Image (cartoon, rainbow, N blue to C red; front, side, top):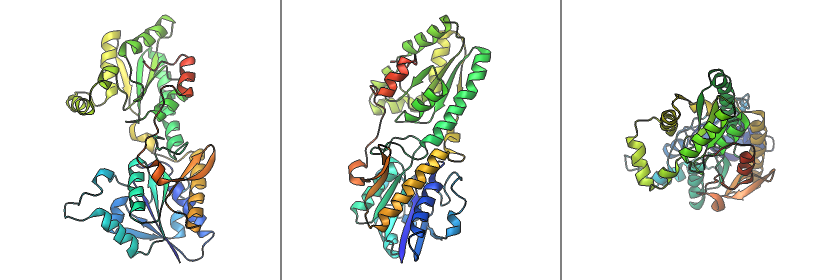
Length: 357
């Protein structure tokens, strides 16, 4: 009998179900006696023993279904070793529930924080396989994460739709794209959507340069400008502040996000109202793209293969176009950020896109 646990942790995305299905199909095709337990609502399910035995019918018809059939929640890594309000040791509770079900492996799907907790459980002696999920594409050690391409499509659609109204009214529009710490999603959606200015967390902007880029377009007879701005975009002045100082500034800010503050400053300088559009959580919703469905099927199949071979402690990654097993200990806790000198950034600048730097 092979017993496998699964959990999805952190923010949801379009292809979590597809990835779980890939693992389940890879196992069920090759194992007669199989039990798969889904821990409900992320690590909370593993901590408090909330789970359900999943049947083959649970994995049927979910390839195209967004979200996660077993629920998700955020359980910050830094709080994992802090007892809960009742004094429960979370790490010991997770280990006890793992052993109580006599699991052979725990398949964990999630982003950076989820991965750090997965590596911690590996260090505690549990058999773990991690599948890299995040629309931010910021997990170190894999070329791409599942959910990223699906989010690009949605963010790009938002920029596409803004183009017609911006052109009709000769306006400056900001489209705020998800991404607090890294700008991969904004960079790709900005390029795909034909944004004129792209502002990323990794490339602090000078508002004077942003205004110059807008005025240059106006002088060239182009009456509108579209900015793709990451949630975590930061000005050069703010980048000089300490993390503590910047956090205080954001807490006191009258603006709901950096895009609204930027819109006000640009509007005051340009003498025209600057509009903000926030696609928000739509970027994580809906059905996964065909690309993500294929990626998740491949990642899931390799995850299943690793379990069958009893080869644990890995993230299943895409490396140079091939699915590979990457040791968790080598990647956990590392962020994959946009290099300001990356080829893709240089190419974008060659086409006339401004990064405000």
